[in-house]
Length: 497
View (tube, rainbow, N blue to C red):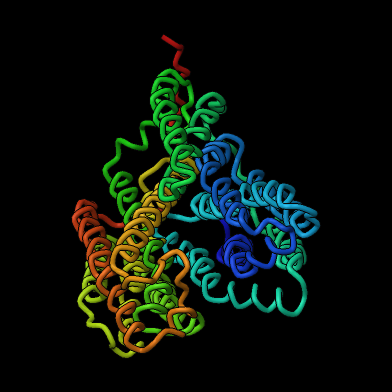
């Protein structure tokens, strides 16, 4: 469907508002987590407030992507927004943790639909050449939310009450809903009207098992449950292969995995997940301990990272839309990020804080050069009827990379720090504030331990990005087309063997 430039701009503005709403909700809640759990009397289970949201937002991606291809992305998008708003209202009225977790699961499901369908709708109404610019604008919601979310969450918690962390979504969301109903055109479904219900169920169970296994494996108390979840995931994946081979309309169409461009973009998405999210998650802890700063000051380093990412993403999207050439940016971006992380590993202890800020800004610039661009590229390689599925798969690979990368880095850091701390210090109870109250010589020793532990971690993440350079070099030297995406020819139903 071809829209006028003015209609496209209104559409992108509406999609940006909704995407920002979904991204902001995650970062706002993180600041209020301890207050919420304390008021509900469930401090020991507060992580489930985030885990439930993240699980739903991850495992539903392929299901929603396929559903968008079958019935059209507009309907999935509107329903997701309504679900998100209803769940936000329910979260604020939660009388106990069970209610809140259930509402957060529904909210995560809605958030997944908002993120995924925003990208799919842009792909349906723009040409591949136009897409990088608009994808970069919509993708700006994530880094902006990382910067402003914790501040907004803190202000709401301190000056209002924690239910408003969720209720603030309602006025913004209702305005966004009006914009969406007016701006998003009615987009028909694809040429594959059947939906793979058995494959969807088995896939969802398998992915839940995989994510829980990765999340729990580092906890001694939860390790047996993690092993059970891992076994469920393996059995589920084997069953899924058998189901999808016989399915008339598989949830993950095998044809999208036969294209070199799509496979390369999936590899780059994995690099972003495993590399960037691990850095953003643990750099504040590293800075607080190695540089002996407060939590507020330590936040300057990830802020520098995401601001570099934001500027780079917007600039890259504009440049690619002008020329149509895209191969240079993933190659140069992964190389710059690898060099930045290598520099982080080689920085001596005791450097001024602005030094790691500059280095991590370079990592953000490198990552931003391709993190949203790959969605435009992967969509250009798929037919119109597979846009939802290929976009969902790219998002899913990134989320899995983030879950695995964060779990691995967290396990390595936890084990190495515990082994390296001076006698008499317990890594489980050593907070940054407690460390700053110790004698100067002990603080220096703790800082050196964290510096020595994180140096190989940074080198490992640099290696992840270095692999990304090799992956990016496999992209074809081509231009993005000015032509609108075409439907693929109908595929005849396959009868079970």
